[in-house]
Length: 440
Image 1 (cartoon, rainbow, N blue to C red):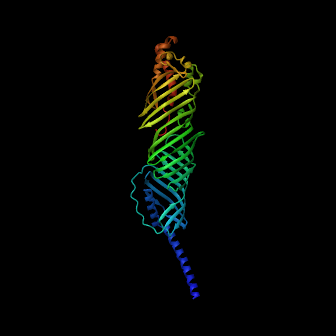
Image 2: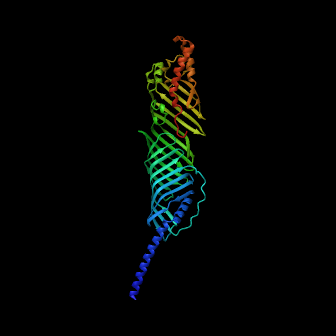
Image 3: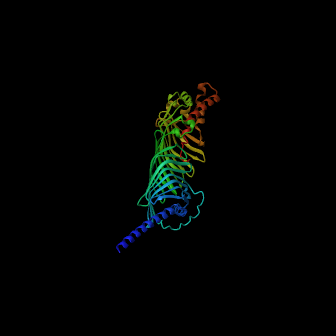
């Protein structure tokens, strides 16, 4: 009897081991099969509300899965999600019919944000699998992340995401490059955020551009998107047209706000400031210096340059506009840009020492003295890229009536000389009027 029990126990043990080995072989074969791939792809389609598909899985053990790629197209808020070389550390709870992914590592993840290019078909309902029930994911690591939208992109960054008890996904990343649709390229240092049902909440992103440029970004990116960008020390050479990069020096700072729907965001409002500004290497300043006999015009320091900007329904409003070279010239006021055309009024102030060399200007045009300057209004009009003003003609008329006899020229000759000189003075400052604005 004892011998029978012993052999029975051994037989049951061998049968159990054989059954376990057989089940393991069957389950690994199922994980590598087309039905499993299709079942998981259908589940992903339902999750992403998009056309989603995995390649066949590779499984050499029950605690590790690998697949070459995953693709999802035309889902809410995105056109493409492409993940390459996915490897997961998994735990299957066979009694509870659960699957826990302890860690998912993705070699490269590419996301193209935007409205779907086409309406996705309703995803197929996957048949339940004996090996798949409750599913949980504890950690995702992306070694190379690329995100693109409407001409902008983030490339070469890393990402780690973990779920929170509140059901959010907490994300942290570092490194890479941010290329906006307008403006300079930025080096992405770090970013933090969380993904919620209403979109991705960017808590903070820190970036650098050039030698001194820094930026801080925060916002919400979803159906109702909004973003705030604070920046400082951005070289004007990175923003100005090529012909002006060596002529106007300085660093741009300020804060800009953007709003929009989904991936389409436009500039809303903000404030811009130029620090360490100089206007240099312009041959016309030799002429200005000769006209006014003031050497400071040859290399003019911008001690103040700032403006508040607001954009509503395609109309750009600039207020609190100030450009000053202390002791030489100051511009104040505001203007509006609508359909590419500019209109508005500035106050132009010149120093007494500069006015004494412009005949007739002090008596007829620059008549109001305050804050160390003598002022006159200037009307702006024309195309925003090439603004026109009415000061040149008024200066020429004043100079003609006040200086024709003194210089001994005919009226026409005097008008030509003075108009040419004053026009060049105004042209020097025209590049500062349409300040470059992201989102325009």
